[in-house]
Length: 218
Image (cartoon, rainbow, N blue to C red; front, side, top):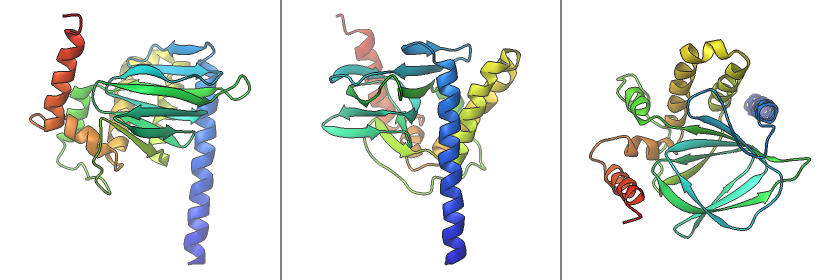
């Protein structure tokens, strides 16, 4: 029991250090307030320095890794609280209420945002040797999970590519495939698995939402 407790303690310390390291990397490349686009397809870094009132926001299929600050997203009366230990998975295009709860000049809200490429998700899912998630999770188009060592490591390596832009065309896709795999290995990955499966109810719902967004003016 003592050895198991010590092992868990070492694991917790490693996760905390990896979160801090990822926060430093995001901060270094997110110098401007708001969205900071990057040369990596689908990747953007966000910096906010003050709390906000509730505002409406649209979430597309994406992964948001929160490395600093605190935010609340509300969908269908359900609150999703995100802090430095959280990732937010949006599996469909969905409108939601958003509010920044904790952010300041000294400790800004920092987020790594990665738009998910659904063909890549389906490519990973097509592998026969893909392990299933540890547990299943049902819910809305938004799901909050706790960042893992594997996910943090992959995200850190993706941001490191910004230091060597010549490597981006060859390496970024490989790392993004790994990120998809790491998500699918979490309980929240079931939402991503469902939306990527043709014929699933969530898939049909997503198509309906996409049509409504495209034809909203009509």
